[in-house]
Image 1 (tube, helix red, strand yellow):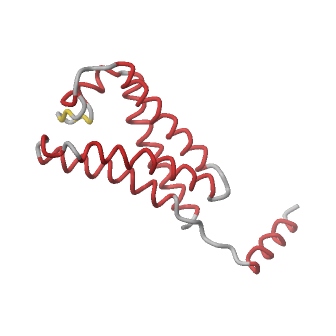
Image 2 (cartoon, helix red, strand yellow):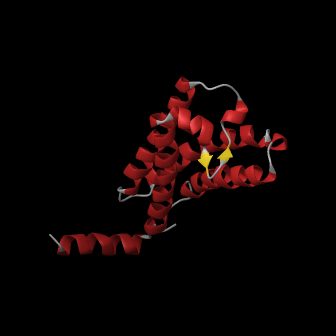
Image 3 (cartoon, one colour):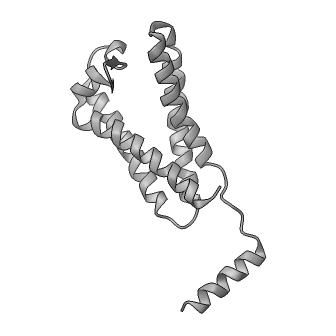
Length: 150
């Protein structure tokens, strides 16, 4: 995977983390009654309001967002791969939980959940893929180029 594509994927995960995390951490009651927006309600249908839990989920998403942003500024692929692992480890049980409640939801919410949660899990999995391999000839050429720019 190219570094440009990895950075785009990391920016996408960062945007998800900032949107969900910022809303949940800063406005937990609104998040509870209104997430994901557009007149749909995915959280309030799942039990009583718990400000502590919602703020913690917001903090988790914000932490993932910051890790994504930090990895996007790295020159190597490994930090982005590690962030992908974190998104996938979070995303899989998150998707499984919500999928186990799909029967109770209107079809539009099932589709929205599957796309949003499955999409963030898929982003994490794709981020785990190795970067483009640099063969020895390319590595030697890169080292020579660095020497010429000093």
